[in-house]
Image 1 (spheres, one colour):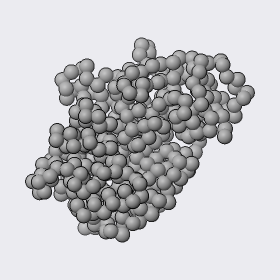
Image 2 (cartoon, rainbow, N blue to C red):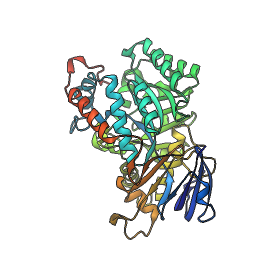
Image 3 (cartoon, one colour):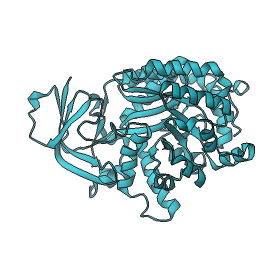
Image 4 (cartoon, one colour):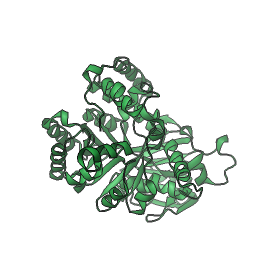
Length: 444
């Protein structure tokens, strides 16, 4: 195993059970193989005893960001569905465009999106899309960490449950454990109760969780009640989906009784505020969820509804929207926002004891941030700068599983030029909508 020394950084540490932040200036981080071995005052370690030493020069070291819900390959569709309602977004743009999707597109879309993610300091993603074996190959090459689920619908047929189960078996634990898998039925309004039951049964059989869109808007919840007498989240409980660890994307339409119900299950919520604002959706009831012990994690959703894979934007928007909705500037303080972005996001993807913290024994997924830019000056508060000032170009170094993926803002595992060119070729074909061949209709 290789040993890596990061010298003279400011280490951001967040308490495990409460949003309390500690900054350790002039500290070194020792990485042995894929895990953090020690964090100690600078100068105690001899650089000659390490395979590599990185001089941080006072940069901030913090856990790599975790994107708890994304459709990374959809960077291919960036900018193709603008200024439309959510029903038109699905019915007239997204699903018709995705009829042109081919396996190779997913590989290059994932590669391009991972390059963007690494530059943004994102080290892990819970991704929910098609042809996920191609996404897995891209993750394997890029060196990042991922929880991958192959999106399926009732219209996909029972055979696709088995196809995605085969994918899950094959790739779970691959790439030195950097790749984990999950089952990914799309949503209660695109999957029948029987289909959801079949997926839940398969997830139990495989010992895996489920990643699903649920109660994305309050209109969806009202439509579900009118049609079935149940909320989308009640549907998930009654079909057994919640009997396994579950990531619920969005839950903006979760009612108080839904939140009380979810508190009895191992469930996490992925919160993507930029998408909600852009599509004029509702906002996840974060405070109520967390008051009930339900973890909430940051998410970008796809670049076709967000336009970027930039969790720093999501972090800022989350904090400010909670203040605005509560009518109080004291809601969602900086420490709480950072806790959600790190430890709580790790809990959402089922890795709360291994990711989201810089502590001995945790996986060595971390980033170095250069706060010397003018937009940070003067730095009265490092934590305030992280939440409200940080831009993608502040990310200097990215390390995943003890391996350096970006050094001095230079990608080391992905040829960005190649990814852009290959994605351009895919985009030319995918930009043609085929509404007569759409795979679904958005009609919750």
